[in-house]
Image 1 (cartoon, rainbow, N blue to C red):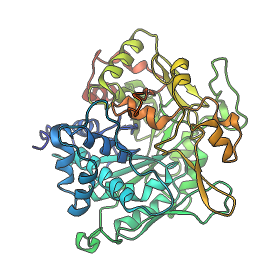
Image 2 (cartoon, rainbow, N blue to C red):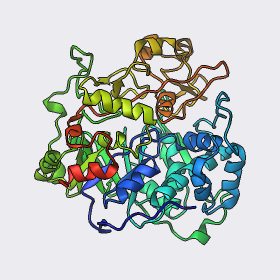
Image 3 (spheres, rainbow, N blue to C red):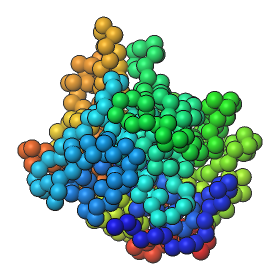
Image 4 (cartoon, rainbow, N blue to C red):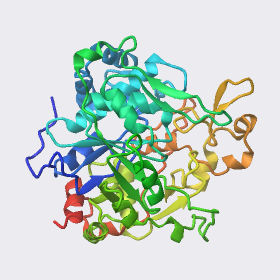
Length: 483
């Protein structure tokens, strides 16, 4: 049975930009339920596209409560592919609580049909469910850093009719061409940075390959709009300089926004708490962004009516809001963790650090300090170091020209053997496992060890003063838009 149709309310004009964008928060915090709820208010709901292959596989192994994923997969345009994914991962009634999740294929440069099938199907299902029962726009958010997943993930989202693609954590200069190619069912490719190599490496997905049916029979796919997530007017100007790299707009994030943030420009300096110090060089000149002639939204501390007013006064089309939605009832956060964050924030006891060392990606990352999670030094020290998901692994050229993969969150001795200094691994958290655990999909190892969660929020929590104690997505929209 499908989800209840959304109530009829204000709808986005197809050509008018939204005022409020619900931020894409991974892993699976911004799931299809949250994006669909925001779309029901007439604003832009966004699903996170990060690690959706693992999310789909683990939810199917849990038995797919409610049958939502199976309903989506029944509508996948190549039934044979959806059938193979179901056959590999679906467990009727769900696995036993003490049984580990079956692993999914890790990202790599070599073609792997099973990996591509799972990635395409997972992204299709998430967007399909977010769009089900209404005709309002839905977006999907990706990290440019996870380059090897991008072509297949985007194709799956486009098969489901995604309307917007938002991409940050890098420079998405090749994404406009990729969208054009995938819309025409041509092979999609992006350059992949391989440390120590002179270039020439690509991630490629070919919709015309064996097992994908006849793309010509589907006709061209609608091309979604691209919003590049940037932290400087310089990067925005770089992307806007030519049609080949120009997005359809920008989301301009301040350093206080949740998740990853850009490092300060120039030499890294830390304050007394160990957070990066940002200065005048890191401030975005919104007048220069506005002069580019593309719509833009401001993010990071704008989740209030006053924040929206400041953004509009700066020439922005509106704002992107993340943390307020991360803490709402439709959020994908594990309910107990979500309520705990709300209680601690309401009591004024929640600290959110911009940790320069936590993320294997090398960007500063906001970590909510909550005892019992990976922010807790005792929990971090007790966790066996391993990298078994590998979304943030870096490809590197090995002697002889072969490509290997390394991650500063893997065992230190393994990282050193791969040519990097041990100090680069100090303090690194396994974001992949920790963020999956935060949405109730943490791995349980064969020896009984359960992966602890890692929680991230923005550093400006002032929006909570205007919200009910257990708020909904609609409450957030009402707050920001002034009721």
